[in-house]
Image (cartoon, rainbow, N blue to C red; front, side, top):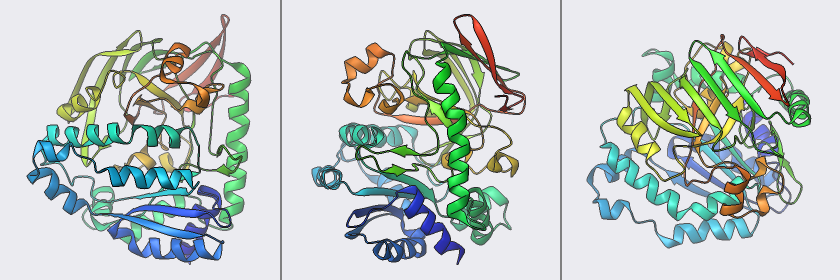
Length: 400
């Protein structure tokens, strides 16, 4: 019953699937049970058809370890064409994530980097169209045994992790009503931030001293967004963040991460970054430094930030006091930034701008987008506008 409720929230609130619309699902084979429920409900809601693209981590690992560098750089045109066709038909894109957080820890970092860079380059236009909200899209999670043991210890089970996922996703009581109220509350703070149009934010705390400039006409977004046809959808379930794009060249200071970053099955943790004029000029990680280097060397835009997101520490996920080793959950437990590409919807008329126009407006352009967490219970965030200041967060909680 709870799995059915979860699927209903994913389709009615997440993708907001419309009658006669195609649903495109990307999912790990371990999520088969959930995909079956999703497919069944999608047709009940009037879906034209449901297409599934399965993913198997264990097979991907074999390919990464044994395929040649040349082979890893190849992305078949049929895969790109399939995504383009689905976008042109205005399909709703649903991505289900989950798996083993440590699956690729013994794979050479350069092979992971080669594969990701090749795919990001090949899918550059596809990603741009999705991140511009041309269509409705949503990312959700489904547990696996190995993920459960990583989060809960050796005695942890898939069923126990599913309960945490459902709780974080507000799947209790009347989940549809829960989500309507949650989105409304997020929107009130979003409206305030958009009205203020701060020049810059100052992050302060034991692990951060960073000034983040904001571009003119920036737009803060929260739980729900509208696609180009005006259909409201929720890109992430769960979601607790309110985010915008920083000015790519107006970031100065230092920070340390507050939660581990899991990137392509590798953990990066206890890392420090120093920014000057927007760019990471120094970095160090006690765990996963080579993977961090791979991220930062993806392209010219990877050393700049594309997202600044605020998340209060009294959010349900943070209060669980669990590290999920999964960005979807950990980024919604704590305030965070993202290396790489900015969302074009985070600036007025950004969807109509080319890359040079976006850069001139202050937004970052890159083929990558990687979130990392910096929020904690001692962080303070102050907004500045024409010399006036407003405390936005105090001790990691909303102060507005």
